[in-house]
Image (cartoon, rainbow, N blue to C red; front, side):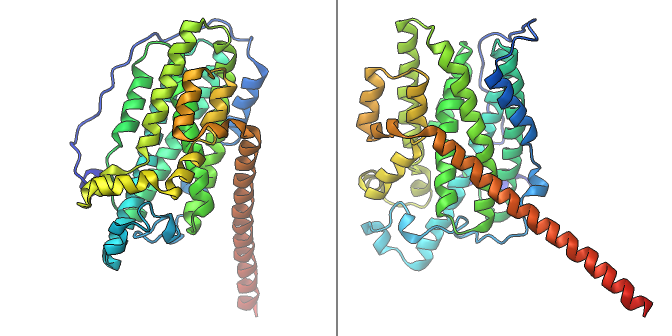
Length: 370
């Protein structure tokens, strides 16, 4: 059954064509790879996993509340709009909010799939092409995973958020090879990594916790790829070139901030948009949520050398400047460790199940012989 039948509101059944500029770059240097990137490439190869087999798709999911979030995590919890809602209306809002969230995860992963393929073409270094190729496979797996989850477990799609669409288009349309890196690896992937981590930690749905843990293992490598590739390159740029990248980062961060306000849900349900947006933007929960979402982006932007006055002023305005003090390496290690633990538990269950099958077969054989 086509996905188009499950969209709210309906979307046109056409392909979104984003024009791209710039060169496809070939290199004839096959031996001069950087150890850090080649090691990341090796990890990217060895950490591949199959979404069809590794995820326990038989685990149940409540389509009304797919992530199983606490009620107070709802963006308009405590507002006059929320207090006036009936139980049925609150359930409907929660269902739409969950469908919107996982739809944006899905669309973002398709964006990452296309941008990582673009990086393979445009980046001048072979070691970067190697790693970007493994990321392209990762992103295909993530699209597969989120597509299956939204379709089979929720049964409702929302169109791509226009702030996310604008940042994706700007990352692809620019002819400079580093802009797809900056837009995707640092900004979009950085936000995705933080968002996945937040929902992994607060979700009470085992399937959601499992799939987010696996995806985050990949995303941590993708953000590291952006840092390694851009840090040395940006140290060589002129002040004017650095300023242009900082302008791109500032605009991109404001777009990402606005992306998670979920205006589309309020519009779809006919709720008072102005009142809901005003409550969301000024709530303590949203301020904390926003700070957590930028916990990976801010220290990464600083680390790659884009830390001029305009960026710091924008981060101060958004209330996220203190994230510059975050230990990004520790967060990345934590994400990988959690994914490894989920992996270990999953394999232990598989091994135990196989052992039971063998024991049952032996026991049946003995009974038959008797």
